[in-house]
Image (cartoon, rainbow, N blue to C red; front, side):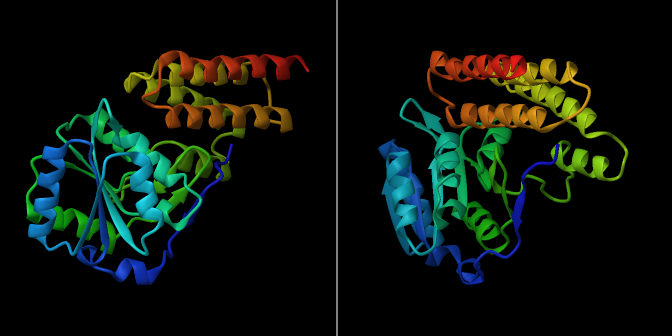
Length: 269
């Protein structure tokens, strides 16, 4: 079950060469006090152009209308979810989808860091943050960006950092190519990985999609065209749930129930 993977190692070099201080720095934060604090730190660190906004749509609009920009998004309150904002940015069909993005947070749990990374953020920095730390982080993500990855379920910087081999699709695909496992066994392993990872993150609905895929794969003996289509449906549904983070439970549940109904119908056909 090879992932549809696109890795671009050759982003626009002219954009990468720009020091972050010369870029338009977009600050998305609905809270006036923390927004002003971030702006003051950026100015002290040498930022030349700063644009503030309070909503994801306005942040993305500014990114789409700037030649080269970098985005800082406050973590979340009842008015803003940084992970959802970055995910929307990465799924735009313009060059803005590759805007270097940093999340500012008061949280530092493993789940928070993973949520930021899985949304497509380049980095997460803890508040309070110093001008020196801002400079180091923004220099890293603008001067030494990681390769940009596009798959069905993820758009953003390569999540394998500092030589880490991310357990999952990459390794399973190589194992299949090397003859160490079959495509069906690799698909079953991926379903189990989805269940484990989503339960660890507390996302029961996404884990339910993993269970649906696991049940289906346990009933087949090989991967044909129909089986691969059903696998893709599960992948697309996972991506849809990720896009709907922060929306009401019953709204997200409709995606899961719709998938389960569609799978039952296709299995009967």
